[in-house]
Image (cartoon, rainbow, N blue to C red; front, side, top):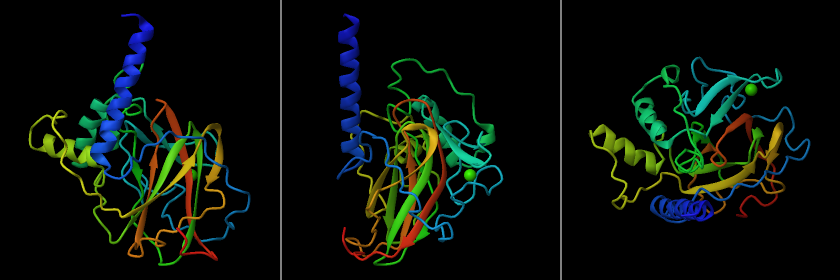
Length: 279
Ligand SMILES: [Ca+2]
């Protein structure tokens, strides 16, 4: 087989795998769309004294892992000091990790292992379609944040590195905030491994019912310098079509390309909005 054909076939196989995964996990729509560079937030979008509803959105508080967020894992997510003192502590992501290694370690994290005891990363090889970048991506969830009916919100965050997606999920009630609780593929792996079985990836997955009933997306990143991103001129309106939403969670979601991503200063602020019920 010539190398060009082999590469093309490998690309087709990965694309097919992504489509199959998307259809298995997300009956409506995949969370994973092609990431585009985010839009920089207009200056002064949020007054500096506006209350940030995201607990520890600047990641400064915590001991081993930042408070207010799921635990870091020490393999694909890290709580680090940024080179820029103005940023202090930030979250670093590494999507260039074999998915198989991440799954093995995440099962231990879900059972209470400390990110300090993470295994050294195994080498990855091109084209890296078997990494988290090529498969599930790395999800990082905030805790549940109360929102009010008929209110609108700006979400902004600082990012450095390739484009990422950031999701805001809406929930009618507080659900489990256990590690990966609302992640279909991981829950299946966790269930199998806790039962002492290797996950069977050949059989059809059971339908996983996500606890969220609403979601909205923000594109961010795309620069090797820190920048602040938001959805330009379109606030999030979690209760416009799902009036039962009472809580949201922020989910930061880097995947392709394999590599390092940085996030800081996640802010969610209630705003005055003349059209709070418009989707
Ligand atoms: Ca910070």
